[in-house]
Amino acid sequence: MRRIFVRLIAVSAVCGFAFWQLTGVKTIPAAVMADLTGDPVAGEQVFFAAGCASCHAAPDATGDDKLLLAGGMRFESPFGTFIAPNISPDATHGIGGWTKTDLANAMLYGTSPTGQHYYPAFPYGSYVRMKLRGDGLQDIANLHSYLNTLPAAAVPNLPHEVGFPFNIRRGLGLWKRVFLDTYWVAPMPLEDAELQRGRYLVEALGHCGECHTPRNIVGAPQNANWLTGAPNPSGKGRTPAIDQLDWSASDIAYYLETGFTPEFDSAGGHMAAVVENLAKLPASDRAAIAGYLKALP
Ligand code: HEC
Ligand code: HEC
Figure (cartoon, rainbow, N blue to C red):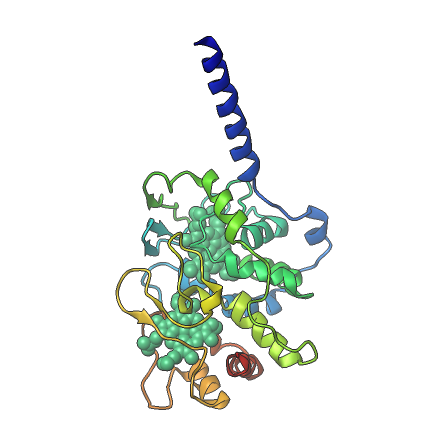
């Protein structure tokens, strides 16, 4: 009897140790980011390409009010409802005290400054691909500088409405081990700078796949069905396929700037906010996105 008991304790200790080992957080060496100087003007472009305000602005903000990143927007999912936090430069309620390294850890690894895992409702599963490009870390440093120029909001964060077992953040370490990969999804010719830029904008910054790619039962994008359309996570309607559009590249670029389709429909739902952001980028970036979509096999 005693021997069985001792064995049980040993087995659970081994399992507990394995769980702990497998669910640890990843971070970037602080020296890597510390060497980079952020440029807030370039950071503004990263901010719009990455659509941070679409999730972190206050729920009903429009126009310039979207630059007050007070949080509070709700995101329904099969795992519960996530509520976007305050990422304004407020030192108490926002991320005013964060270093460039803190921001890089959050965006690339979903790791918080206190060593906790973030939920992938924060699309770090796309932003992680910023590591794959030479200027990706510089873009994070630029974004960090830009975020510090925005107004502070003294608005406290609301807790997520997520039940057991999903409320145990440590378990997300297992999810990340399996699903947080750092590969480009679509091969694009190395010598074509426009396609390389387009891929960076679509697969990393613009996180287009987060809405346009179907997910598996644990919420990870199924990259084998990249951009083939997906049910809306809130359960209402579908996000269309964009991998085989029969629009010309200039039709696509025009849509990303104005929201008008070749049939003169206008972009609705979440895409309206995406277009509002992409319209602020240089025309060459919208052309690069269109080029990438047309180049998909
Ligand atoms: C699709 C919606 C969405 C987008 C787009 C998004 N975020 Fe978030 N973000 C979230 C959610 C949801 C969380 C909460 C995650 C958690 O608590 O685990 C979060 C968390 C964060 C945090 C952690 C804040 C804290 O208090 O710990 C930071 C920092 C952050 N986001 C920055 C950004 C930046 C910068 C961008 C743009 C590059 C961005 N986010 C884009 C949804 C989003
Ligand atoms: C937050 C979710 C979301 C993100 C992120 C997103 N989209 Fe969309 N997209 C949508 C929805 C929803 C629609 C349908 C809009 C409508 O019904 O008017 C759409 C429509 C489109 C269309 C028009 C397709 C058609 O047949 O009418 C294109 C093109 C498109 N998106 C491209 C992109 C690109 C490129 C990106 C990344 C830069 C992107 N989307 C990111 C949700 C999203």
